[in-house]
Amino acid sequence: MASIEESKKGTNTYLSFAKKLTFMNKQFLYKKHIGRKIKNISKEEYILDNLKEIVESEFEFRKKYLDQIKNKLSHNKNLPERIEKKAIEIINLQEGNKYPEAINSDFSIKFIYNSNNIEGSKLPEEEVKKIVKLGKTNYKNENEAREAFNSIDAFNYLDDFNFNIPSVKRLYNILTKNLIMENGNPYPKGFKKINVIVNNSQTTPPEKVEKELYELLDWYKKNRGKIHPIILALDFHLRYEQIHPFRDCNGRTGRMIMNKILMQNRYPPIIVYKENKSAYFNSIAKANEGNKKKYYQFMLEQADKSYDYIRELF
Image 1 (cartoon, helix red, strand yellow):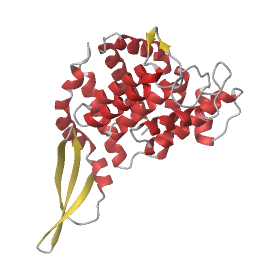
Image 2 (cartoon, one colour; image 1 turned 120 degrees about the vertical axis):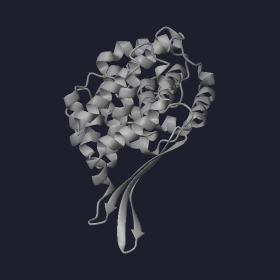
Image 3 (cartoon, helix red, strand yellow; image 1 turned 180 degrees about the vertical axis):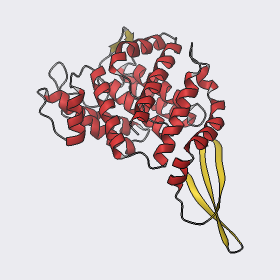
Image 4 (cartoon, helix red, strand yellow; image 1 turned 90 degrees about the horizontal axis):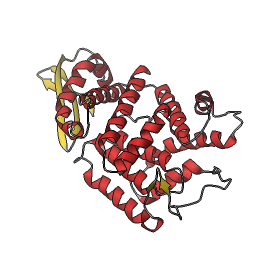
């Protein structure tokens, strides 16, 4: 976190700016002497006035960890550095208070529209905007409109999400509240009771779901700070989709948890865009067959696209 520090020398008071954070279990410190205190200056003012230098300093500290990502890509190995720098800039703009609430709601609209569309929703983006901004819609398909309302509640719940079984179930319950499946039945409660095949691949059998999900959640807690946060989030998402703990709504819950991991580790959330739906499912299928490079490549490209979108909102 950043702060303005004061020190006394004789009768004069001097100011310094300091930013401290922990990344990959290492301490980062950026400190600059401002000078004699003539007027009050806030940390937000200093960040915005010196944004480029702060971003470069933090990037220099963090870029040595990017080999963990580069080694997993088949091409475009400059992509991780580009994403890292954009992420650092966005987070610093947030800390500089140049991040109005409208940005959160605009991102929510884009995320909800794309995430639900990937799963078959036809709700137009304009209707999602009405739901997020106004809290109402007259859209003819009530089930698809309800999906969007539920997604807003799920976004709000992420603040309280803990990496445990009850939190995963709670997120699923929020996302599926009062929804009807394609077969006309309500979404079932709890974990799946039948075997589910996705893209011709078997997912975890029902009797092993809770055990494997517990192991995945435990893996996350043990590896936070050891594995680069982006890889941590992407690997969690992939393993979660392989488990496929619920009868349906696994993609929506999985993408929400992936973004919780990113945000918890000081990265902006990402969007998987609907126009890239086929490539998304194909990259997961290839990863399940043992070739993860296509999956990492695809997801990093989505992160790059998402961060460009967020930066345009400032």
